[in-house]
Amino acid sequence: MGGTYGNIVMKNAPLDGVLLYLQQVRRTALVSQEVNAYCVIFEERSEFDFAEGKALALELSEFMSATALYVGLNDNDVLVYWLCINGVDIDYYDSSPGIFAEPIFAEGEIDLHEVSNYQPPRPEGGDISVLCATFDVPEATSELEQILRSRFTFETDRHESLVRL
Image 1 (cartoon, rainbow, N blue to C red):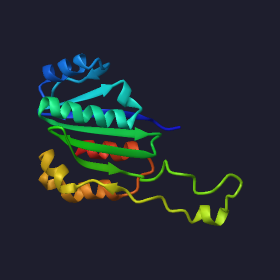
Image 2 (image 1 turned 90 degrees about the horizontal axis):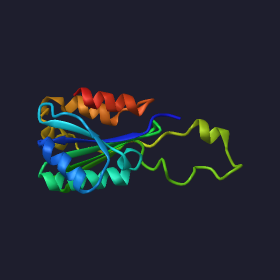
Image 3 (image 1 turned 135 degrees about the horizontal axis):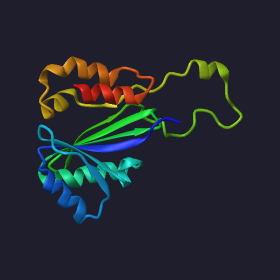
């Protein structure tokens, strides 16, 4: 099994306000120091639950009137994010849409020919222009497009590539 995690990157949200909100809603979290107007939140419930992570990102972005990006990774096979600004869900990305849907084959009916021809789903979502504008990297449009649309063996590699932008 691969890694599974979730975290929230806050932009332009004063650290004391983030800590106050997390305390008020009784959330257990590790919170980084602010660096260049960013901090990262590793919150216990959203660590393994994408719905919890998205909900917390929406709440924090509304409470702080700021930007929150929740990024979740499941078993190193799926990378998702939700971009929230001032309490509004602005953008969504899923590297492997439908991967948690019903199995392709019923139990005992695996056709090796079909398995060998299986093509994983293409990533969906991810508004390049919104991400570049939000994170002040207008020059990264083509590189971001490449990262979001390419196939990665391990989704941690995709996440690392996004962070390096």
